[in-house]
View 1 (cartoon, rainbow, N blue to C red):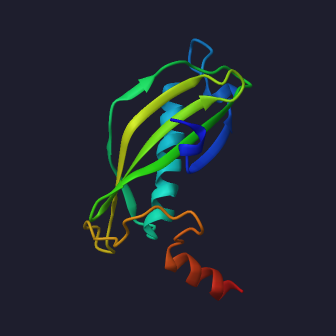
View 2: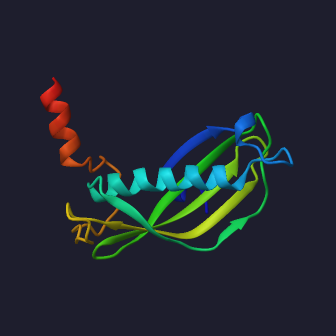
Length: 144
């Protein structure tokens, strides 16, 4: 994945609590970060705070990171389904520039207020603005 192909990025600093017994980045910590970032990306693309993880494909760990390294997680939407959004993830070490892992498919499903899959109506990635869920906008306006 080229840097220009990544449409959503976040960075993390590898700290002591993120390490495994070998002194390298614990895969469980990294997967938690990816799932959280993918959820945020799905919520902003689908305009619904009730998007949930449905599927994560094979995870390809290529290298690792150590304490003090800075890593960059990148996501890009690859397909919109009727009720779902599929994205691809890549994590890179910003110090060594090496790829840490890739995930070809992460699928999120858009849910209704009753918890059932619901059509979202989108077919394209948004770049110009986020589709912030309306209940967040209403709460913000009420606070002002």
